[in-house]
Amino acid sequence: MCSIVHFDINGCHYKLPVVYGTFYEKAINISKLRENTGLITFDPGLKNTGIAKSSISFIDGEKGELLYRGYPIEQIINKCSFMETSYLILNGELPNTAQLKSFSEKIKKFNHINQEIYQILDKIPDNYHPMGILSSLTYILTAFTNCQQEEDMYLHLLAKLPILAALTYRKKVGLPPSYADHNLDYTSNLLKMFFSIPNKSYQQNPIITDALDKLLILHADHEQNCSTTTVRLLGSAHSGLFSSISAGISALWGRLHGGANQAVIEMLETILNSGGNIKKWVEKAKNKKDPFRLMGFGHRIYKNFDPRAEIAKEVAENLIKKLEIFDPILELAKTLEQKALQDSYFVEKKLYPNIDFYSGIIYQAIGIPKDMFTVMFALGRLPGWMAHWKEIKFNRDPIGRPRQIYIGYKKRNII
Ligand code: SDX
Image (cartoon, rainbow, N blue to C red; front, top):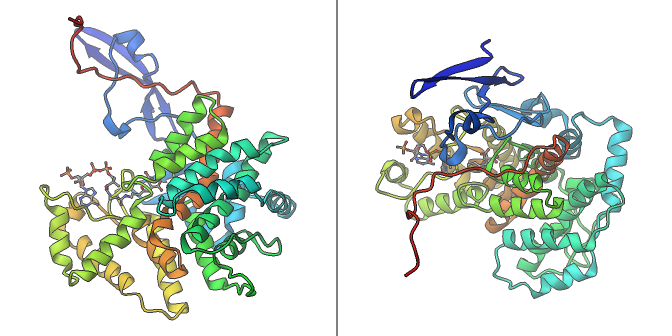
């Protein structure tokens, strides 16, 4: 394996070291590039730029593989709960029975929020998007949360974010707040806080709990995606955990990122309501002059199937079958996927369904409203965001401060 790259610029010869990852992925270390050559690199969207060394998750985009701390997602989804997965992502190893019990018990201990948060929520307009509410309330949590030790910060957020999400939902549908039931596991408790009705005993549905637990696992971490890199950037400035997560929630809100799951269902409903002419919409997505894109298709890293989409598709089919509901949106999604993957445009550009193509169908079947889908994505991604924030602090990475190519005015004087 070569450990140096050589190149010539304007007749001068330069050498730069090569960095190798666990799976021998290679990078040119350009940390001394400007110092040695006066040049910087230019890479809009950071498509070719590694911004950190990380050991949390690994994606092989060509093979369509995803590992969490070395374990393939296909094994985790069948052998672990979201609680075990959160522990693994945060701590690097799967918990033993005692560690899992202590982890879960501590989260239950922190499973409450201050009365003032309820009052703040009451003041937020009903039509404000749930992602804006979640980001705002996560930010203000800092003012009401005293952590005796750093480890507790992560557990406070794992405990409190579901409460904020459930309160946001209940505000939308006009229900009073519901409180945690410590006899329930994490995901059952999350569903209870969402859907319990006052004066009626809450009936758990293990089919729904299992589907949601799997969806939370599928979202738990995904290398340097836009929102995770946002959290890392704030962590590099030594911003607090809660404010860094609040910023990550705001980044995830973007339609091209976590907001795609809501956009997928809206797209499928539009296609269905306009007569279901899939060929017309696939042609629109291919037309450069048309801003329409096939939401839920394509990915910056996966140039093969997104393994999470494969699993989410199976979870969606099982859930719909077990709940004995007919969902025309799921049928349309499967037909659209087939048609797109038979089209040379999508095949040549390696545009496959990503996780957002099927996750919305599951959320909808569970009874989550469309504008809350990305909130559910945030609940799943929380352990990953926190692990990256923790990692950048532990690695003592320098503050993130990229350079630019200036194309503005030359120096001029005010007349
Ligand atoms: C998530 O990074 C992550 O890991 C994100 C995520 C995570 O877990 O955190 O996986 C979650 O965000 C998944 C992605 C959700 N977004 C969408 O589904 C929105 C629709 N997808 C596209 O906007 C797009 O595919 C992106 C944003 C996902 C990726 O964009 P890239 O890598 O910047 O690719 P690109 O926009 O440069 O597209 C390359 C080509 C272009 O055509 P050309 O200019 O080369 O002719 O493919 C075309 C694009 O026009 N293209 C599409 C398309 N996606 C890309 N054409 C039609 N429909 C699409 N969906």
